[in-house]
Image (cartoon, rainbow, N blue to C red):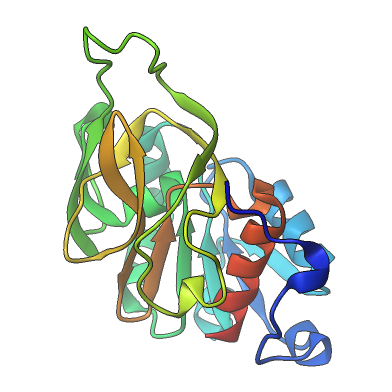
Length: 219
């Protein structure tokens, strides 16, 4: 198990003062876990606003799409507020977390829901193999990530452990920027241009998660 000790964190590009001046928008589409994301940012001396206001989101330096809940109802809420159109128009760095990442994909089997299509990847439901009853669904707990691509994982040791709570997974694809294995290998993270997504919860993933958030803020 890869362990990142707090006193061994590599240095980051932006100072605490620079991060404190950032405008961070957390998209509010009734998806849960906004408070835990806010707390994680506060620990990094970063202020954020939870908002569904189009102008605030467009004006932000960074945008986070959180997510805990059911895909079809979350996507319906997003579309009712026309947040789907806003998200697709963004040019600044965007991070989707858990359900937020899945909604950035093409389609999910949860509620047969069409996503934003940023990542042309399908989201599938975990199925426990008959010969592997030890694999419980949803996956809840710590698992390792590997095969990193991109700056989101700069300075993170291979096989660092992060925290998961999910019953659906994004397939492996050219967009995959990190991999986890649970029943089968799947996309722990996806990236395309300014858009990034992580299936795990960095805000609940200890020091590794904290540093992934720092890396996102440094993009």
